[in-house]
Image (cartoon, rainbow, N blue to C red; front, side):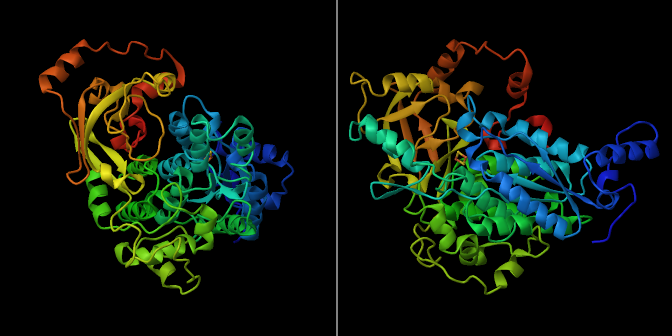
Length: 532
Ligand code: FES
């Protein structure tokens, strides 16, 4: 890459407005020189690095080392690497939930990419909401960008058993509550669930989003599943830095890489992974920033024609380190090849088809990544449901559910909030039978046969808030229905009697959030962030 001195690239890009362009450039160079850069370095194009290391984000603990590797790659390709901080979202350190702050992080990412003088950007993310936030922001910023994900944690060991966050967190906690594990053992387990840097070790939201970022073409091929502490992760970081420098001046911006066809590829991958239901919301939001609509009807059509191929927890047996060793995303994409749009261009400039035509890395461990002819399940891991309980849809993780409950009718036992659930669920006086249906009217997480992302939600006045203990609910996966078996007139009376939620936030981000948040069917983005 040749050195450039014109005022339109590198530090000369997007000048501060002092009314005199030459003065603005002179002043910026002067201040940049205070950071010790030579004039030769200041003449180079700049690769910004959106850096999300944080003391409140254990999943990004290794980012200082990764950052050095990214910078090495940028420099080797002839550009100047400049990192800048953005909001970081560490899943378990945020109250009330990390999703509330995803859009705030996307705004921060978008505006800092746009406002600062960079010719391309590396997005360093990983923990659950950081990957969608960065992709959403970068798509809207329309500047050349490439993502580097944190990579998953390695598993720990407890009394001969492999443990990984966070499927095993819930499993052990349930055993502790049931009295099968004592206080000493649960304390031991606490120190063995999350034992290295990196994102949760199972196919949870973070790993699903990393794989979808690769399916979309926004990260380097084969890098989604490399463990956080593996030396290959550092090599991927170096290669990502070099690839970012090569993107400078390119028209391959994220808003072109993410399009209807690459989004469909990502949906196929999500279904074949048996991935997180949250990923449907995030992918919907990411796609919408590029003007692409993801509908739940489309999800169902693809789900009917996409097999589940990946055998990882929380649905199956393995952990992310096994997926990497089994062949990772390359192996999965090769299995799905006949179902994918191979003409999609990735961030490297190569098409997906060109990538998959290479014979390299052809090893596959069939205990982790099944052949398409012998799938784990013939249909996709997720299915969308509709009905009077979810007029705009809801999602069932079919691959994690008990098939005996796919056609089921039961009595509702309603909990109004997580606090209500915690207060009553272990009460021996709670009237509940195995065939009953537990209803939580505020969001939470769970596993097993569970219908999630019911839209509109109770807080938005959706029918979920009108369910009462004793009502009958009917679930039919075959008919894609979830119905509340209560007369329409009775529901209208309940709605009329419902007290409006008067506690609207008066100020700050909470107020903006309450005013602008869209439903799960629109990715929970803010209305004003969608392309106009
Ligand atoms: Fe960061 Fe799970 S807590 S990915």
